[in-house]
Length: 238
Image (cartoon, rainbow, N blue to C red; front, side, top):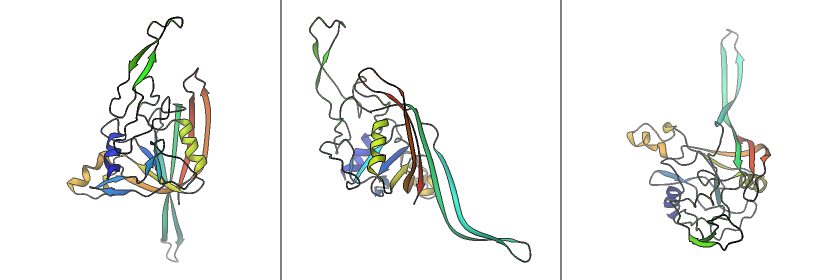
């Protein structure tokens, strides 16, 4: 499956970005959880509200701590002997995410992520104003991609993950539930064998959620490249 290699190449560090949104539940390939479908902004991807098997990798750029809380649904009652008994029904998770001064876009132009390698298909040349003099002709220089990265002047989030406008677009196109993948040290999701302890580089938690609140503000407007946004959202498990 190309998706496994794809996700490997979309990581800047040895661990994936902490949060991923996906239309579908994860599939497990060689013990690794990967999202089926195509990443938004992949080559040939034409987004339509809630009818694509798509996913979006959220940036860790200026992300605040991930706040998680559980609501336990149960019926507690004291018996005639004064002991408290609980009839447990279920437990649901609420996740709060926020970013401060997050670039409004992840790349200067649409990255067209290659669905096999995960790397953006960069343009091979660009015009460079080497002497910073608009009166003199610009020269053409070759652009080299580094892993899953553009040249620094084409990539705006530190890890190539989604910027503010991309997160907003996901919210606007997903009125219904979707899956959130979380990458943090929760090895017990897989078990307690030595192999399970080695899952630190994987997504370890998966929840089917709604966005119950979403807000954003434009902190600073850029000149001709991107703005700086602040975003807050709350996810509630279905």
